[in-house]
Image (tube, rainbow, N blue to C red; front, side, top):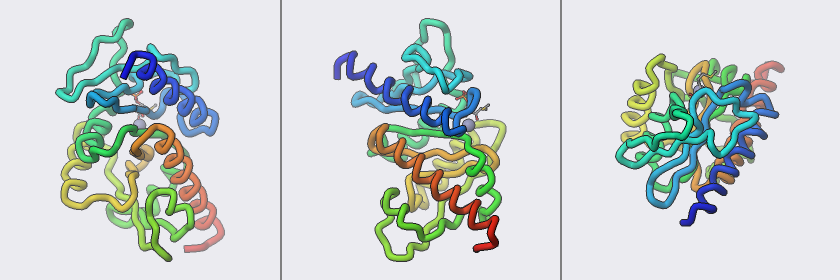
Length: 209
Ligand SMILES: CSCCC(=O)C(=O)COP(=O)(O)O
Ligand SMILES: [Zn+2]
């Protein structure tokens, strides 16, 4: 992979972040996006950047051994890098991991039963890889600890025993994270889970269960 291909990977994340920002899913500095490269390293958004106007220099490269490449302006990697590392270690096929904060993601986290969110059997689930008639599908829900490493450790612990049915997880009162084989698919997954969350909030409002 040459350096222009690496730049391209960041450009796709910049476009996705701008789109998510415009949807109200990455307002202010909320959320973080990453893309894994063939050598196992990944680019992740630097911490505290406005996600509506990212530039290629707003990414930090992390190597498989955890080494952080020093950024020109001393930018730090996302405070939630440990979650992206956990996802890449758990799912070898994952090449991109997107995390956003939407109002709907936070609302539906209150519909969770224990540590899972039951998902309605919508056709849209096929886009997340669930090809069943009337699927009984749940999204894993995690507590939002102040220490991100604790969230990452709980993800590792749980998914290494019970793999999720969909490539997504919800952190209560925080946001949703998806992973996919490419940035394009990760963007689609975010749109699909957001559609499902919007449907759930609307259904709840009219008393549907
Ligand atoms: C205002 S968002 C609080 C931190 C957070 O949850 C997030 O997603 C952004 O953190 P980062 O360090 O990636 O900017
Ligand atoms: Zn977050």
